[in-house]
Image (cartoon, one colour):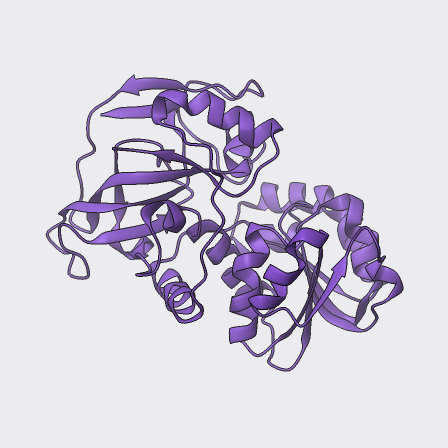
Length: 334
């Protein structure tokens, strides 16, 4: 089979298309014939070695974290899937490899595909859906009736996070570009700020939760709008001691992340709020709940119209690293 692989960490985001053996499956695994695989900014972080302290990989490494496809074979102990089932998922952090014609994955790490989505759309939904679910349920432990603010929430993450948050009974405020306002309100946002016209930090106070999608440049403004005892979870600003401890990383990593995240934790402490960092993991049961929300609310993730095959992987990587995207960039398989 063909697979997109790298042989070392590098900021030169190039992969080789190699012929490798189709994976064999264990008793609790399924073999998936990949129909569509997403190319995410996470690929750049992995390829550059930026996340090696969270997860270090062996080489050659087949890249790709997010897939949709058809079950080809099932292991002896697998009962929830059968051949020809359509599935989607975020692959396990320790065993990625989605940009390939086939992938082996534990059955409990993926879910049946939402009935309202194509393979391309489904491959664009799993990672953002799980990120939203884990940020809201696990990191924030958000409570119904409280208010969530998502700066930069008009993109693909917000498209999944807003319905998940509304399903939990939250009031949701979003900032983003003017073009996305009506679409964002239509999927459930209660209030929307055009970031070019309104400084949200001059308008909002006593917010319960913030999900940061913008990174450290926006951190102080995000903290300023939270109530005392509020919580901020970031997708970008970086891990801290809490992250290392909750993920049971070795003591030396807990100490290192404590140093790396000290400035962020210090800023949060001054505001009397909690700072969390999320690095999304695979979880089949959670993804099944996301599937139900997608079907109930008819969410259709945005997909970039430019078409790529595995032979064009480097063009797709370059687009994600440097281009202006109109949705999730996908690799299509025949």
